[in-house]
Image (cartoon, rainbow, N blue to C red; front, side, top):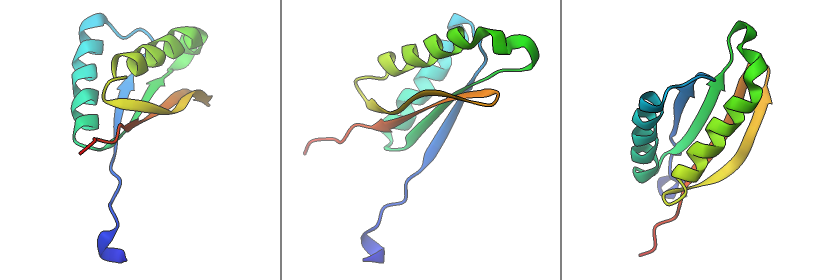
Length: 97
């Protein structure tokens, strides 16, 4: 039984609430690659200091990421604010043989 178990790898992508377009597309490519390789993806927006005022920007950013990665992954947990982090989990879609 132990030999047949698969180890689940979780990769992280970190954003700021004011992440620029180029930085977003760069991290999007990494997220795409992680999900293609079969790893789960933990995307989070980290709020520093007064940037906690931009909660909506962080949520929009994570939902946009989920929409852009829709073809390779599915949302496991919607964006949720935990302290100064807004976290979202994505799991790779099962490949049909």
